[in-house]
Image (tube, rainbow, N blue to C red):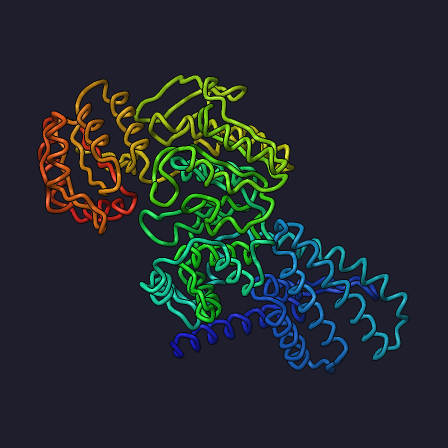
Length: 606
């Protein structure tokens, strides 16, 4: 590890030396004077770049080395006040970039360049010229101000272009973090720590996450949130909303659970998962705070704190924050005054924790409603809505509902869905499943509320965001020969919607199904619904202590009048179903999202 740290420091030292060399070339060999006072040079551009990427210390080093070495190379006498001015430019601009992280890139660049030049190039360097050469300070300040307004505009345009390049920023990040490993803690060590067995369960409550976040400086208080809870549809809603906001020009954080292929998917900015090295670096910062707590945080509380810290450090404009379980006592619920709270829908799930009726579950989900912040319910009118709206009234929050009767389906096949909702006509979504237009309609309702809360979202951004949104493992086509679809349906409502979609897309033709369930789910109901569309069900035993065995599940399905075969593994189920699908039928895999990664791995191996 020490060798890795040293290598990263060496890379950064070389990079800063190269920037200093470029500054010398630009300032000492490619500059030119106009008249007695004006001098056009882009020598400060490398210093400004170092400040934007690595901060004020790196910028100061580039400026100092460039000024001192450059003066010696061309035979100039070293003027310490001029050197101080160069260093001040780096410190001020670098500090400005740090303080304006939440601002959009162009204003950040303009502010940093202006303040850096005003302090370093205009005031301090003018003083140096006055002291050493006897020039009139008031005269030279005026000329240099005009000079660096012009030069600064050019430097700002070039710097903005550099900072807009993902390739440039990736290269800069590699110099400080290396490939896939952070200083002090490796990615593997971070993941092992997060998944540590001693963090599996604690008493429900928000005290631990509050203490953990306070130790980090309460990063969640620096952020704006759209808070999302609900039994089903949370991930799809969050993905589509984040996609629209990104198309609208915002820098959007997305926090979801669980992941389907790789842990980093849970924490994203504009569709890009948190880098391995950054995750490790933040985990290293969180660890001593968590370890010092008398009541240790849970795994999800750790992940929540890491997400808050990452989003705050990256200065995102808004975070779409998906609750993990329930709402009232979920670790995400320490946020204050979100832009919008969303409850996508209510059905029976996690009844041992949240309650054995939909009304009890609704009360738990309603716990995310905050004083004075609007709430949107994506479910149907009824007792659950009455509970949610009552809580909203108590807290002075406007309560909205998705008007499902105003959804008009135009097209719905395996290439996508086109629907109308209120003024949004011809809306296309690529996410499959007959339930997705309901999720998308809730997104459209959310857009209108967010616009009233000050966000600028054009209709073009809405249409483009919905059409391009991607959310894996939700009625997703993952193979074509045979047609192979994965859907994360694992509870009664999810199975109901999956069966409805199968009937629609395949016109009554039966399909082969791979499925596994947990014993605490209503597997009798699930077996009955699957029997409506299954030519044969290949049952598996999920990797979970609460799993219903493949044999027990097979017997439940057979008792409902359908054919079923118990399989020893997912791999065997895929092999047998693919062999059966030579008759042209589709294969549908239904179950926990955690199964998705295993299925993809098997397909890739085959």
